[in-house]
Amino acid sequence: MVPKYLKINRLDRKLPQEELSLTRNSEQDRLYSTITKVHRLIESLGDSPLKPSTLRGHGVQTEQRQLISNDRVLFSPCFFAPQPRKSEPSPPSTRTSSQVTDDIVQEQEMPPRPLPHLFRLQFGEAIKSLPPTFGMQDYTTLSDRGPLEKEKWKSTSNLRLYSVKTPGVISFGDWSVGTRMEDPTHEYPHAIIEMTVNSRYLGENLTAGEMKAVLRTMKLRLDMCWNRKHTNFPTLVLSYITPNHGRIIQAHVDKESVVIQYSKTLDLKRLGPFYADLFYRYHCSELTNNSTWRFWN
Image (cartoon, rainbow, N blue to C red):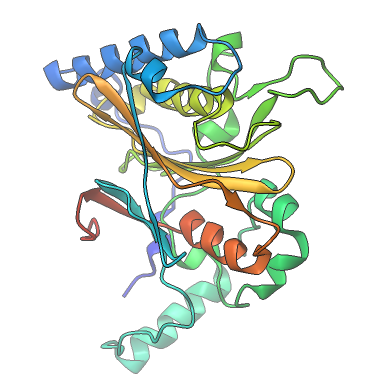
């Protein structure tokens, strides 16, 4: 069996001309219209936390979802299934000894993928609690080597994946996106980003920075020619609210609305090793395409 991470190949492949010249169908037109409209409206708002009633008026449906046994967030529909805890027993292997040997050789040939930048900054010493064999390249088909990470787009102020009021000075309301993960072969529309928000606010409403990070990520990916075949752009956000809080956010488009679901605000310092495990398992999510836990492929 070929490990999932081996799907990440030909990172800079050239798309055939017919794929580059794809035109949108009616469903894709609706997706483009929805994301473009909501993005424009969200950019017009200030930097204060955004109430659900305000967001509804701008085409955004928000909902806080329960964190079950501190193990996973009950997103519905679910587009990102976190890896199970490493303490859980693995299912019996059905592979032959030769297949296992081949996989070991392939794993040794793959360079280890570094931990996401903001994740390392947030959890520090707590990262040592992660099992040593828990490598990102073993669990996810997404990569930090795609066009978002390489910043392959025309830079404009309302599409930058950060907002800094005063260069060189940390101000309340500033935010920035760190590691950006997507499928570099463009087969899957999913993306995972991590971000940090400098905010005094520790309530349960989404911050303006979180909203803008979600909408800018969707808009950037929507405008990339190789993504024209997709009819949705599920986005997972691992949000760190300085200094010691965070939450997990999932966003997708449903007809003419952007749907954003999120966990409660978590105290990452109080249970550092535990939440390091939770956030890392979400970094290594399997990709799903509906409300069940049935995996793609």
